[in-house]
Amino acid sequence: MTTSETTLAHRHFSENEQQFSVHRSKLQMMLFDAVQQRLPQDSVLTGQQVESLTEDAERVLVEVTDRHHDDRTVTYAAKVLIGADGVHSKVRKNFHPDVNTNNWEGTTMFRGTYRAQKPFLTGRSMVLVYGEDAKRFLTYPISREAEQEGQSLINWVAMVPQSKGKTVSEKETQNVPTDPSNVLPYFDDWGFDWLDIKTMISGAEDVLSYPMVDRESLASWGQGRVTLLGDTAHPMYPIGANGGSQAIRDAVTLATYMGDTAVDGDLVQALRDYETERIPATTTVVEANRKLNQTERKLANLSQEKLEEMAHNGRMDEIQEAYAHGDFDKI
Image 1 (tube, rainbow, N blue to C red):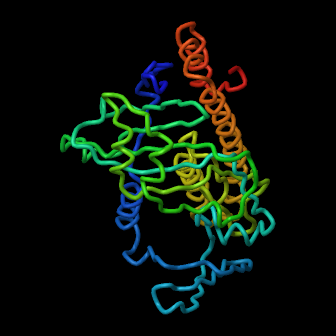
Image 2: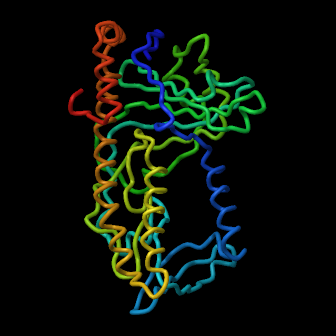
Image 3: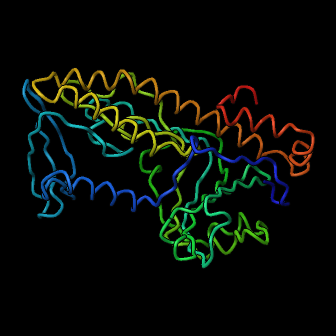
């Protein structure tokens, strides 16, 4: 959609193409509750910062700093170690100490949530607005509970190009809390009768600012009794809404291979089989997200008049069809 309210394209998803939107903390607690039901109550420990790891033929030894007990040093032993400690992973650095280049494509992303006292459109809608100068605004609801109360908890992402692409330090990739007033000037004249963008920004809870970054794909993730999962292994642009999904697919694939070798099996081989399947798959997604972002930036760089012309002459329908199938080279 343009800022002048011209619909560029729309798509209705079938039952086989559903997207599930959920607040990150809600998903984390759903997973935590599932773990608590299946494992001993003390299986989840927080505040454990990985410092180093070693392994022998039978186990992995992980040395951590226990933040909950005066920063004491604790060593844990396990048959395998799955590094799922995020984009700034200490586990990854143990195997790939020189792979720390963060590719910033030049866009700063502002993300916030806003609680509205009415449902958000259909309750399943997602809206992407293109403005000039490659600015974009994406928004959608993320809470079934709020919907059942006649309200909506709305996630929004405001994308603002601020630089040419370059590499940035690890510190520069971190989420930084910011005030909504720092976002409003970029979108001061945006909004419609049915989508109050200024109110969504000004009334947002916990706005974060961070650069759109990814890394080059790794040829291998771990070795021996150690492997990686999620952002630890394959950080990607969030533009494709695939980071969480790919981490879940990693976990399902890993569980399948580990389950097949649960009794007297070769756990090390299970980890390598998992990597063999998931490395090429996630590499494809990382590259697809880059192409998707390039496509959206090109569209957002066009004038509103040009976008409206493309909507009327059918070109946007062609782009939408290619977009839906990931055929970004055809756009």
